Image (cartoon, rainbow, N blue to C red; front, side, top):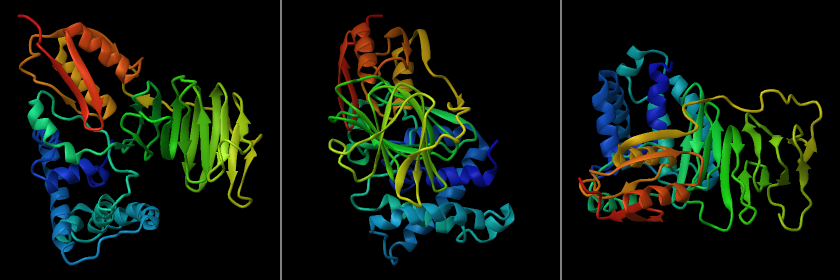
Amino acid sequence: MLNKEEKLKALLLDDRFVDWVNNPESPYAGYWLQWVGERSDNAELADEARQFLMELRSAEMTEETVTKESEVDRIWENIGMSIDEGAAGEAKIRRNPQRGYWMAAAAITGILLLAGVAFFRERSLPLASGKKKSEQLSAKSSISPEVVRYNGGENGELVFLPDGSKVTLSKGTRISYNRLMNGKSREVSVDGEAFFDVAKNPTKPFYIYTRNMVIKVLGTSFKVIASDGKESVVVKTGKVSVFLKGQDLEQSGATILLPRQVCVYSKSAGTLVMDTSADRSNIEIAAAGNSRYSFEDVPVDTVFSTLEKMYAIPVHYESAVFQHCFITISLGDESLEEQLEVITRTIGATFSISDYGITVDGRGCKD
């Protein structure tokens, strides 16, 4: 179980919480208000985190904001140490709230304010369901096409990608990707340790980026480690192509990996090498939570809320129109678009998807 300092760290690292503190019209307000009201210790944590962030905002009026992308990595490396320095004890935190955590909050908010830097911009949290479409769409400017999923818990966390792929994140791992993956390729950046189960799509290659490697697949499963100065790939099924970052992916020769093979980035040589001595056991990462969600005759509100949680994308619809709609469905085995087609066909509606979220329109269901 996470202690108080770890929980507070998770809040400070969660830019949706930061947005709620700094923006009264935040689209995430519904979720956080519900979360705060669930437990007294949630309210206490939120108040303490809010105090740090509000003091930071005041201080930023006179402080220079970080603006260089090259400083982002250094800031992230210092966040953990800054928080540890401020976590010597609860009494100490209460007496001097501007030490330790303030430094971490400053670093975090500096990152959030970087112009043009989208990497690590959002975490996945459910939005409040059932808002009027007009109210939700008014928050368009607050929603980024880039999503960041961060696992701040002790166990592996399963993440659903819109193309039907699944990623299990180890503790402390972050990935970032385009919310819809609607480009010519599917691209994910990873910092930490993650197991990928990539949905097959021969016409749309899947790329994973670490600090020094680019991994290309069409549909397979494999584990990536990109933390503590180590970078490696071990394949479970299928075939994986590995390149050095900066290479021409069309012209350069790739290192090809087959099941149970391992490729490691050699920092000293600056090259990719096959590692025959690497440990191939425990390729997969045990994930806490469901790999699929099954519903039987439930309100469609429940399904929309689950989609928001699974894919970190808001669903805009008139809850009053669809209040009498019930559905039986299993989520998690197909792409987001395929699931939406089934849902809307069942309730006699239509949908559209953009960077601002999913919009569902229709006449609703009869009583």
